[in-house]
Amino acid sequence: MRQFLPVAALLLAATHPATRYSNPVINRDFPDPSVIRASDGFYYVYATQSTGDDGKWRNIQAARSSDLVHWTDLGDVLPSKPSWARRTQDFWAPDVIQDHGHYILYYSAKPDEALSNDKQGLCLAVATATQPQGPFTDSGRPLICGPGFENIDPMAFDDPATGRRLLYWGSGFGPIKVQPLASDRMSFAPGSNPVSLLAPIKSNDAREYRRLVEGAWVVHHAGYYYLFASGDNCCGPNAHYAVLIARSRSATGPFTMRRRPLYTVVAGDADWIAPGHNSVIRDGKGVSWMLYHGVDARRPRTKPSDEINTRRVMLLDRLEWRNGWPETSGKRPSRTQRVPLTEPFKHR
Image (cartoon, rainbow, N blue to C red; front, side, top):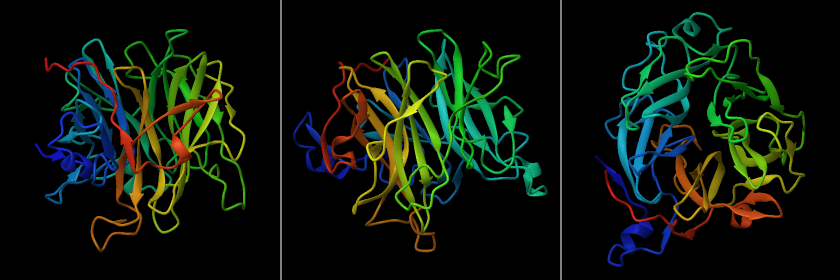
């Protein structure tokens, strides 16, 4: 298995343990990263489809780490396409949750019927595995389908206050939504309906990131539920993307957006274009770390023939809590950073 080594790790290889690292921590196209820490002690991160070194598509990418900095490539964890999406190649924004020894993967895919029906957009889907590195097997049917790309970017979350199993999702110039899941997590709870939490706004202001909102991620901290979202254009020649933040006393809202211009958790700069679509995890000392993608301005495409700003590498930054709100230092991607603190690691 290939291991991704940041430049700083190579420079500090002779000094163990390293005290600092530099971004990116996965230096290849690895968009929309979603991280968990599994029962085996490893961190696992899952990402939108891309091609490997062999030029072949990986439907859902994954990598594994003991420290959030050094990552080993796991290849494709959804190697078999679902029966309802065998002829397409749109597998986006995965999220995995562990449940009593099983691992449940939520993702988005374009169904085969969309090839002949331009009104059919992407669907939310669910797959399962007995280990975090897969292989995951699709359930055989989508959770929900709809027009365009409204039904993408799922994120599963168990509410610590109520015990409810929730799924957040949304994009496509519609709102971010939440809906309870059934006890087996394989479908929505009977009789439940989606609740809209955060809607995009119409604006001609080029500085506005809420013209589209997507990439929901929720954490519970100090009595609040924090909803991270990204907007407004992830990639391409008009890439304009940042992580935004809202909070609520309830997992199902209503959520209040932090006032502008403070509402960005991280935004781009001259080195990193369009950072966004984050996930959050705590290290062994309880410090929150944010994994997200960004375009390296020095290498904005994988191949010369690719569209600009489509090579989205994975970045890692510490979240600092200030006045009740999370943000990265300087609200920009870091150049170098102290490594996460992890408890003694033992492979099981």
